[in-house]
Amino acid sequence: MTTPFYVSPQQAMADRAEYARKGIARGRSVVVLQYADGILFVAENPSRALHKVSEIYDRIAFAAVGKYNEFENLRIGGVRYADLRGYTYDRDDVTARGLANVYAQTLGTIFSSAAEKPYEVELIVAEVGDGPEDDQIYRLPHDGSIVDEHGSVAVGGNADQISSYLDQRHREGLTLAEALKLAVESLARDNNGGERSLTAEQLEVAVLDRTRPQQRKFKRVLGRQLARLLDSEGAAAEADSAAEGESPAEESSDTEE
Image (cartoon, rainbow, N blue to C red; front, side):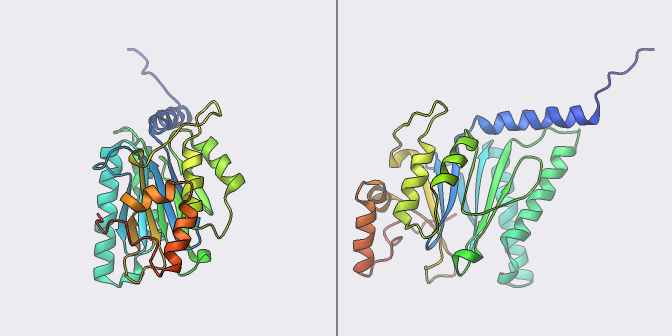
């Protein structure tokens, strides 16, 4: 009788974690950072149909990197959880913390199960508050752990290098134009320290804007506004529009998921 092949639990978990990390690192990065009026999401994503950033509920948004079919299943599950909880109890009972806990349980169960491969995804769940001090940003790696982030966070691709760049330059009170410029600069840096040029067509941009009068704070930044913000005079253009009484997000599309 042959002796069955043995792998220690520690080695098995290490192998699964390495498998998931390699899959996540192959994807393009997503950056999430706070600015004066809310939370900004910027992803390097040339596709206009396969979104990496989506709305979950009134004040909550979701960003992900990795395998699209896997994080899309998680996004749909999160929308169903939020809708059911808001309908059964109260809309204020739907929080980013509660949603992050649900995702953590799901990812943790899949990661520890020997019957299936771990999900090759990394998630960010963010909720905009009444003020910057009330904003919540949670990062969820492939193993289901939860990391409470502040200021800025990057996932996917060369996330470590991007995060280091953001940590050195992010500050409180950034305008939307300044935050977008910082996010694009961080995404444009390659592993060798050089810089690429990213155009509006290569980016997916959205915000949770606390100044919106609507209950739903999520809005995609598209078209003329995105091009203007990416322009070297984006900050001045935004200031001019604000002086004229125009909301910085009014030119973007109201099409939401």
